[in-house]
Image 1 (tube, rainbow, N blue to C red):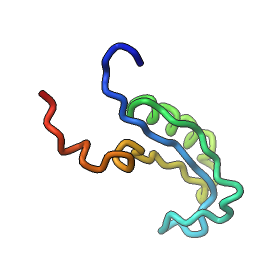
Image 2: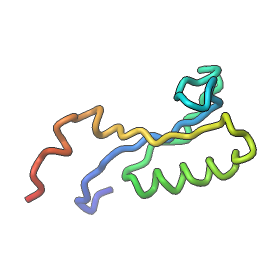
Image 3: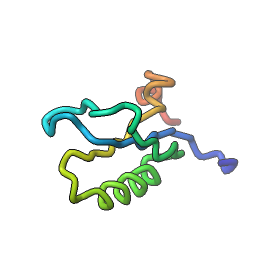
Length: 81
């Protein structure tokens, strides 16, 4: 991304959950790291694709993690001038 656009990293992960009401993975060794994406839009495309491929398994869930919020917690509060 050399066009000057702000990079807001997002991680897409997924796996089988122990309970449909929570977000605890059944087996951490089986958690799939789908990838790291430079913005929410591209992460959403990857998330949606993976979620649709596993629609028959109710315990399988994929998540989008906002890495940019973990790396710089104050980033969302910064003014964009």
